[in-house]
Image 1 (cartoon, one colour):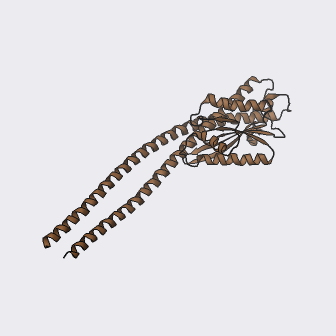
Image 2: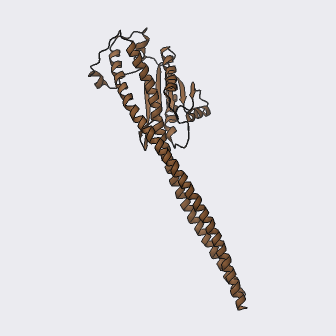
Image 3: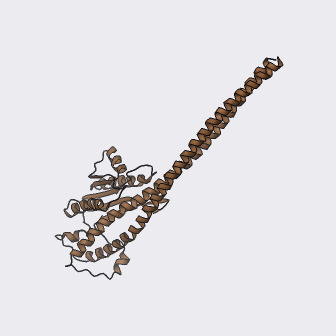
Amino acid sequence: MKNKLMLTALLGLLLVGSFAYAEESDDEAKKRLLKEYEKVQKEREKEAERAAKEAEEAAKRSKIYAQKIDEILSEISFQINKIVHNEDDVRLSLFHKKEQIKTVDLIFITADKGLCGGFNIKTLKTVSEMLKEYEAKNINIRLRAIGKTGIEYFNFQKIELLEKYFHLSSSPDYEKACEVIHAAVDDFLNGNTDEVILVHNGYKNMITQELKINHLIPVEPKSIEQTHNSLLELEPEGTELLEDLMKTYFEYNMYYALIDSLAAEHSARMQAMDNATNNAKARVKQLNLAYNKARQESITTELIEIISGVESMK
């Protein structure tokens, strides 16, 4: 009888051991899947980091040129504003702010793809606030949307969009950028609008984005001190160079905004993926602790039941 009880206890322990082994096998499989997940996630992070660095370099190179052409146009604007404004001269209208603003063209850039955290929120919030501000002043505002996120947001809000541009913010193209800005400039020159504003969330550094609002047309002096010290002399009769310069100024500002926005988007996405990975690791750690606790409790309960059964058979 004693041998029978010992044999029963031994079988019980083997049974518990088999359960524990099965649990450990499941645990090993879980750990293997987590390692594969972490491997894939690291590869994605590396890809996002590489894309962010490439976009950062492109934005930095473009920024130098954009700043220089802004300085030149600011000086030209200062000199032109000293000239008596001729209402019939279309060229000069690009430099003179109208006394009464009736219609404004607002071009804004958002991301085409997701997984970039709160990157689009600043831009969408700013555009919405500007809509309310201009409506309060009885000013008509026309929206030209670049990027899937912004288009879907305002479609959901049932707000009319004048133009919609997909796949441009994710893949900036100079020719397409020219098409966008030329349409806005032509409407201004034809008297359909009184002002053109460009809004995007730009790159500041790898962890910070900066919202930028550029009052593109009319072109106004940005620095009074700099323009007062300017050595630039304007020849009113020479128009071809000015027209070419204005064309380049508008085109490059639009293209630079796209590149700057893309660099900011990549940096925001890299942060979002890093935060998601850290949150996932923390959650997995919590689940592992809960799993091990439950497993230990189960084994302890089964051992107590077996021992109790053996004791009752004595």
